[in-house]
Length: 217
Image 1 (cartoon, rainbow, N blue to C red):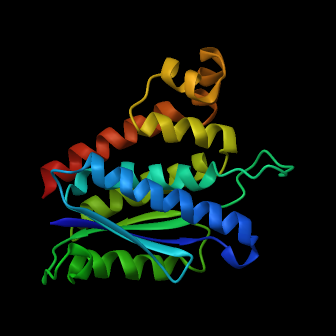
Image 2 (cartoon, helix red, strand yellow):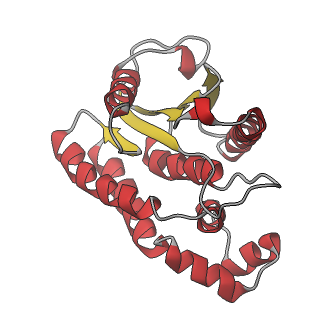
């Protein structure tokens, strides 16, 4: 079993060239960091069509955490002359967990249920407001996370750039004091942003996702 993440930037045709370049630069950098972090496990992300990306993750129980890390990375992108506190960019992400039937030189060249689940789910999201969904071979798991991820969508819609920034570093396992140092703000300011982004609920969901997927497959 593997996880496949397929994602499209939302309304990317409206992005300035500078914004799109910044997003793609940040994504490519993050893909390299993920490969270093998961050196013992196969992980492979690639950008395609200029505004979409796909990744294959052997450690499927971490797929939701990685998806949120990439979403927060995109939501926190800043430009020097921006005049809004809200995210300048967003992304729709579909996670598929399932088998892979053919393995080429890399997992990204493979095929199988995980790829089909992820790709078809993202296609179904094109005319929806939903930003993150999951599809697996288990209907009980699909039903549980259909509801949970719907609630997560509502929480994430309220993120500012500042809160997305804190989410990103929290998902990397950093402590409040470390985040404060990186962002050059007080620890109490980090704590306020942590509360504003709904981190407590997000962390509970991530633990539940990890436990359920580990036990189910």
